[in-house]
Length: 203
Image 1 (cartoon, helix red, strand yellow):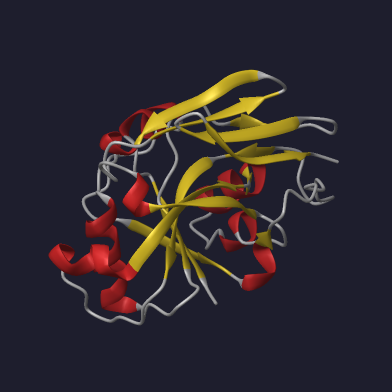
Image 2: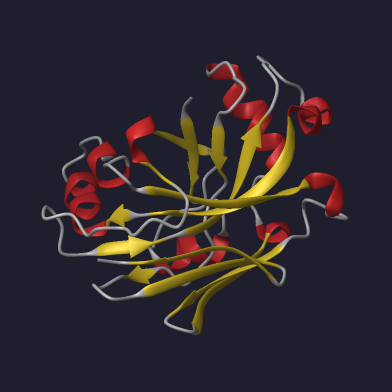
């Protein structure tokens, strides 16, 4: 199992972090040790003073595939979920400024939270999915998959050029604007439409 992720896929998020609009998907990877499931608490690591939440729609693959065409990409997943791509923003900022790889800021242990999944056949249009994150009862991020710079099926086609898609792999599809820091005691609740898909605490 591998976790693939997309950065800079929402224009408003790029503006808030002062990133340029990419001309092709920005891809990075997380190891299986990054996975955090079943609403287990997230523990702030001791190597960062600025851990940010990034709420994202997550694709779970159910077929093996390589060099997938966009028009066939829908055949490779039957469920869409919601997750959090935790980012050590202070580390990322420093590493980017130095022109160094920034995997440690994104791929550290438990940095890929995954909640429940919903069947794709229960969603009218995968490119019109509303989702949000509530932090301590207040909505801090809200987005719609229609706002993606690169739609889901184009993302799948792109990553499958470089990586063989395997059953059980995950794809984080990018985060909208509104990212921010977490603190000990915070409660994070994630929704697709009005269905809660995760609910966990920061410790």
